[in-house]
Amino acid sequence: MLKKYLFLTLFLFSELLAFSKVKAEESLPSSKLVDFLKQQSPQTLKEGLKVAPGGDESTLALYEGDSLHLQKMIDDPKRTSFEKKFINTDLLRTKGDFKEADRQLEICHKTYFMEGSGIHLSPINLGAMICDQLLAGNYFLEGNLAAWGKKIDDIKNTYYPPIRKFAGLEQFSLFDIKMGNLSVPPSEIPPFTVTGIDQQQTLPLQSQKLTQEGYRRSTWNVPYLTASLNGTDFSFFLGTDTAISFLPKALSHSPHVHIVGHIEIATNGRGEAYNGDLGIVDELKIGTTVLKNVPFLFTNTDEASLGLMVLQKLGKIKIDRQHFTFGKDIDCHCQKDIQLGSIFDGRFYALRYPITWQGKTEMAAIDLSQSDARFSFMLFQPDFTPEEEKQSFEISKEIDGTKVTASIYLKDGNLSIDGIDYGKRQKSVQKDKLRIFSKVMTITILEKADLYLDFINHKACLKPNNSDATPIPQ
Image (cartoon, rainbow, N blue to C red; front, side):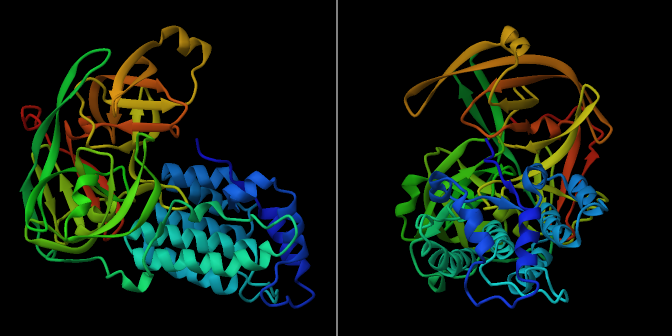
C-alpha cells in the first residue's frame, strides 16, 4: 500500500512564522522542526519520514496521474499560494514536463517558494526537503542517473548531520531517497542520450506466446519490439507501466554493461515490486535510432522490457496492433494532456488513461505486456468486502518455484474509452495485500484504436482504427 504522507501545510506555516521576525541561523533546523521530529516514532525516523504539503490527497493524485484533480487543488481558493506552488510541481510531473518542473524545484531549493515574502528560513526546513526529494525523483524518471545520485548525496549531506545531532533524532532519515543508490561517484556516469529521431520510423510488432498455469491454463500473444542491444537483437515488451527498463540478471555480466548502483524497489502498473542491480548499457538501437548509456534494472525476470525512461526519449510514438512508429515528426494532433502516474521517489511511473467501465470513469495504468486473452481490465486491492469474498475463488501459480495462492473474482461489464465502444468485457479483481492498489488496462486498448503518445508536447490520445478485421499479430 502507499505509505501515509503527513499533511504538513499548517506545520510548514508555523515553521515559517517562527522565522518571520528573526533571521534564521544558517544550517540549523528551527526549534519547531526539532520538536515536530521528536514527536515521530523511532521507527518512522529510521524507516524514513514522508512529507507532502497536500498530504494523501496530492500524493494519491500524483500516483493516479490525475492532473484534473491536481488542477482543482491549485484552483481551490482555500489553498495558499505557497501550497499551490508545491502542488503545481506534481502537476507538471503528471504531464511529463520535467524541464519546467525541475526549473521550479530548483527555485524552491534556493527560496523555498518564499521569494518576495521577507521571511527568512534556515536551509534546514521541510519545504526544502520536499522539493529536493521530488527533484531527485524527477531526475531518476528522466534517466539522469548522475543528477539523481548527486541530489541524493546532497540531501543526506545537507539535512542529516544537523538534525541527527539532536538527542532522539540520531536515526532521522527521509523515505523518498531510499528506493535506490549509486555505487560509483555521480561524475563517472555518462549522460543518457538519443540520436536519430528527427524522421519517423515504423517497426513491426511481433508477438510471443506466454502460457500461465493456474485456475485455468491460458496462452496468449504479447506484442514485442525487436531492438539491438550492443549489437545483439533482443525482444522487448513495451513497458508503458514502468519507469526503468528491465533485463534478466544474467545479462549484467556483459562487458557492455556497467553496474553503477542498486535499486531496492521498482514497481509496475500491477503493483509488483522488483529489485536488483542498476546498470548502464553502452548502446540500444531501435531501428536507426541510437540510445547511448541506457539505464536498465537487472532483476529476476525472463523477459526484457523498455520502460518509459526509454520510450519518452523517442519523441512521439504511435502504437497499433501490428506496428510501432516513432520520431519527432509524427502528426499526433492530440488535444488531451498525457497522464503519467508516479510516486515521489520515482520507483513507480506509468502511463494512465481514463477508461469507462459500466458507466463509471476511472484512471487505469496501460500495460501493453498484459494480453486480453481473458481479462480486459484488472484490479488489485488489499482486501475484499464481505460481498466480494462471497463471489471470490482461489487461484494458484508458481513464482520462482514457490506456489502462490490468491483470491479473485470476475465480473462482466461494458467497456468504453474516449467514447469508443469496446463492448462487453471481463474484469478480474484480485486480493493481494503485498501490492499497491492498482487498476490495469491490458492490450485490449489497441483492439479498436491506435495509441498516440506525444512526449514532446505532453499529449496523448486514442484514434479509432476503423477496422475490426485486423488481428493482433500471432
